[in-house]
Length: 379
Image 1 (cartoon, rainbow, N blue to C red):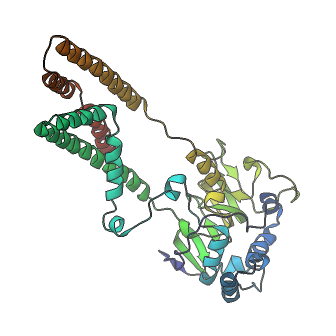
Image 2: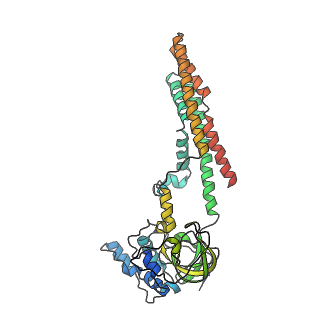
Image 3: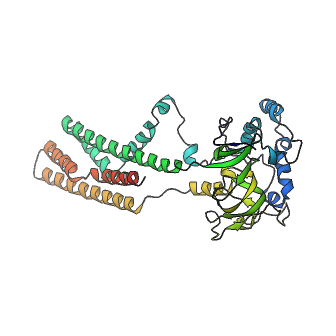
């Protein structure tokens, strides 16, 4: 078998949503298979599925659906590149798609040329929603109505500068965090087109791919073990087990019609994200992306609304308190001026000046910039 340092996927254009409706096997069936049945059942996936009467899919099936002449074809040659597009359409891609990714703004010409534009504008608009900033914007509006254009422009320019600086720093910190994940590309060793690819991108895996597991590898997808040599896997990140679990290619004593056993009892299944502690083995992918056990957990966590940190909560409370106290004091000053017979225009002008002077408009922005710079230094 040949080895390569990189694999360039020829079918990366067909990344669709993960779908479980086309996959015909349950986890109980997968666990009950004998080791020699795993490759036979998965190799027949393309011929077991009735695509329907859709002309385009029928044409696609006629061109790429090939029945494997031998039961062990997947174990010796793996999938053909011609079949990957169909498999990815039917069973999904090996990507964890969350609500943020699904709602992501479609790429246009502007976002392609300036990918930083929309994130910075979003962060800039969120900065303008701070209570203290809103009060200063109200002060600028009042100044503009009273004809004090210079004051209104100066307040607006100051708010724009500090908010834009905070937005840029926030964007830089987010990009720094993303780069941390790119320091260790998620790759694996896989068999495709009769060759062993030592740095195969995990996101290009499909159901039925054969992967080779060794000490120190991260399992790239849920897979059914075929054969092993003293293979043990650390599943603490998924099941909480504090000891490595011994994996085997043998079948479990379970009926295919029974409910699936608990995760810590699925001795012939390796789960995405777990770590191979010792030994080696071969396994066939049975679930990718959001259909994996790790993907199901990530999907549930993605539905939880993100909370602010204690520091952010305290800063928000302080800002609201200062805004409330400043508003009360300004109203009292304006009322006293009106009661003493001061001109209305002069009274409103003094009130607006007090608002601009009393509100610490830089407080939330300084906190944001400080935290963003801290993230950049850690990265």
